[in-house]
Amino acid sequence: MDQTPQEIKALIIRFLQRETTEAEIAVLQAWIREDDVHRQYFDEINVTYQTTVTLGRFNPEKIDAAWKSLNQRIEEDKRSNDPSLFSPILRRTFLKVAATISILAMVAYGLHTFWNKAALSRGAVVYHSKNLSTRVDLPDGSKVWLNTNSSLEYDNGFGLVHRKVVLTGEAFFDVEKSQQDFIVSTKTISIYVKGTRFNVQAYDDTDVRTTLEEGKVELKVKGGRELYAMKPGDQIIVNTELKKVVKDKVDPSDYSAWKEERLVFDNVPLSEIVLKLENRYKVNIVIDTALAQRERLTMTIEHETIDEVMELIRLSSQIKYKKEKSQIVIYE
Image 1 (tube, rainbow, N blue to C red):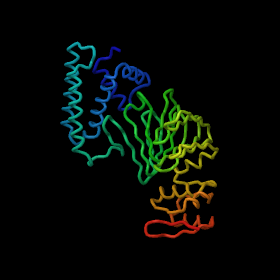
Image 2: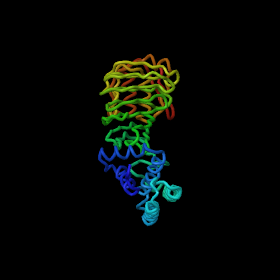
Image 3: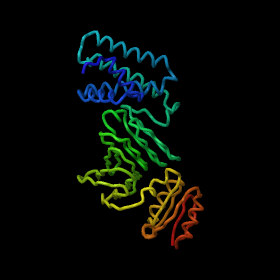
Image 4: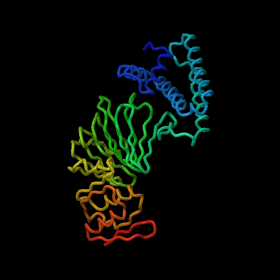
């Protein structure tokens, strides 16, 4: 490809600012795939750009100086007629500039939050949702709703060289259609889609539950070979310890109602209800495993307090409960 260093840098920056057309993205994708060094260049520009966005208001003079230094080295390399774009001197300069700006980032750490996302090494972006559900708009146009106590991570190659995210906790995905696979990775499974709507529950130490609302999904258990195809209304539960896979038919809306601050349970085990209550109300609930699996309830929770919910459970079943210090104990 015959782009000059300045044209490539400008194209990368337009991509990071989400201002590129589909044709420009295709050009940039092809350029990055030509050589591993091209990917290194993209990463270095991304580091510089992300820290500039985050720190510009705190130290604009130093940030401007860093960019001028980088541009000067590009021009010098251009005048040297080096067609590779990546002379050893230029590579060292990029690393030096990135390191300098990273030091500025460390100084400003704790002073600034940029839309609740952190620019990490290699341009990683992490969203954390602690006490409230959060909507995340991804660079490819996909939308993600994060439930409480959840996190979503991706790097700035997202939408350019891949569409992969890492999920911890629970999220609902509305994926923009594309020929490029959208991949959701958890500790237990990987999910492959083109464009669809689905919910994934993948909190630590619990079964992983994937519920498909629209479109098609392929699910793979990590360490396994089989791909499980899903259709709308399908739910796949993967036991995190035994890697056992169970497929069932459900009403998908029951499992995405949390986006509207509702919890809907339709003849589900009390164990599942307890997990949802602990996550929503930030309480510790103690219950015998056998009782939690045996008792099944149907109920909808909207704006009730935890005390009101516990009373509803008591009146709907044969169980009792009591409060002990900072926890709730459920018993027969």
